[in-house]
Length: 278
Image (cartoon, rainbow, N blue to C red):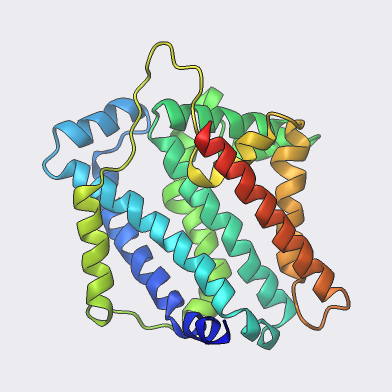
């Protein structure tokens, strides 16, 4: 077990995540040229059906983004022992990169404008608006789908959240120097995977009674069946972020916080599995 743990820690997860991020940004530029937030569903359909290699670049953008987030999670796990070398401010900023990365992925789902994207956007807007006093301003800043369609979601996806993530992570990622030729196998794997597996796209279908959200949203979607939006969509996710922010070995309740995070993730994994099988 210790050998596997050491092997996992030796993997260059930080470099892998940055490589996937580079591919995501480059392919995202290609996709953005063809995308119009005023007609999201039509734009994605046109990209897949009419634009030369459009479906491939959309798949490449989609899957490289997923790999970026998964590698980020692995990087956090593998380098946690080094967290004690960061100041509390730096650790808080690095913790904040995780929800911001999720928002980047989530807004990408919403921008598809299909059944999943539209439903996810409406759910997110409803959760945010459930916040007392600050709900409306936050919705106006990040979503405002009902009043402005995909315009603000699009701006935040390609500019707002990206710049915020870069600012939060810059002190950590600036020490990495990653080139495609350093990880040729990974680069080729991501590019080939996108050739054979198309990015999801679910046009509206009559008679559909259940729409599954993105994989990282399934557990939350399941929670919303049983709890009010304020608790399921805001309070419970925030408890995980607080736990990660406090997860330092010099904290007096370190062991209990670690147990709480493990239990949280275990329960969320079960809820995700239920949502996936529903």
